[in-house]
Image (tube, rainbow, N blue to C red):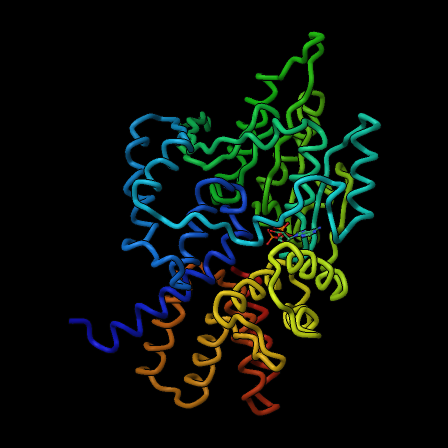
Length: 418
Ligand SMILES: Nc1ncnc2c1ncn2[C@@H]1O[C@H](COP(=O)(O)OP(=O)(O)OP(=O)(O)O)[C@@H](O)[C@H]1O
């Protein structure tokens, strides 16, 4: 028999998994659309209790399957096999709306149409330079990049395979072994080099070198170029960014780089100046409403007046968040009523509880319990800077004005050292 505390922990953990999936879209999982997105969907369905839900958490299933392929130094997970295994486990097969309604072509882009048209022009002029695509999370960067790849290479760019590749790198005095998850088609490779930590520069050098070696040749025998999509370049170390600059110059004939990040100010001037900078602003509320109404038309729920406007207003101009909230409401509270309250995000509620705990009592015991709660958020994949920012805003609501300044100072300090 489970105790009440265990039950609470379990349901909280399920809610976090939903939130984690929300964030995973912004991280590495965004780059792995097939398998992990599948798991994200299952997780969300599971948290929502849809279709009965699977008996097992999907993550253990994934971990169970992975070692089957990990005996090889470089292994590819055949997606058909995974689909078959997942089918055997009778897992639900719905797709999240954020994925289902992600525009696949530049012509279908709803928000940022102007950027989409400019990208289309670039492709038609066969003059695609290195690109640096930056903007806040959930603004639509990845969507634009994926549509651009499709415009460049056609449907072939969507036939991707997921690899966990091991790199053996000669670092002068020693051989370094690094494993990195990559998503690749015959025309492009996508990865997150900052996952390699302080050894990211070796990854940058080695991958571009390998791509330069395996240049694709078209039907007329002309040598083409491959595209390397690097995510979170703002998290690359200084050395990583320096080697990125060098390799960008050296191999510019054989590959094009598309660099994605949230903040261009963390990318060195040398890298920025070698790329065409594309700023993807957070969509306006009107644009978000347009996207939600488009989804509403396709899914056909009865929408009370002003409902999409309320979701857009609460979304913080984050398109992903708006679509996820819309879907959560559809799952939890359909049919919609006129004064339906939008459910708050669970992790945000949890951080608010943490802030109240901190303000109520300052003792070693309370410190220990708060630390435990923050660990719980971290293990459920809520990024630390997001936790800190939310915690700060919650604390600012509760603190005296003399303390606010100091709390802001320390929050800024710890966000900068993360
Ligand atoms: N132009 C668009 N038109 C319609 N829907 C869009 C558009 N751009 C993005 N979306 C929707 O918003 C979701 C989030 O977009 P996307 O993943 O491209 O954001 P992002 O800026 O790359 O976020 P992050 O920085 O967190 O990775 C997509 O899954 C898609 O459903």
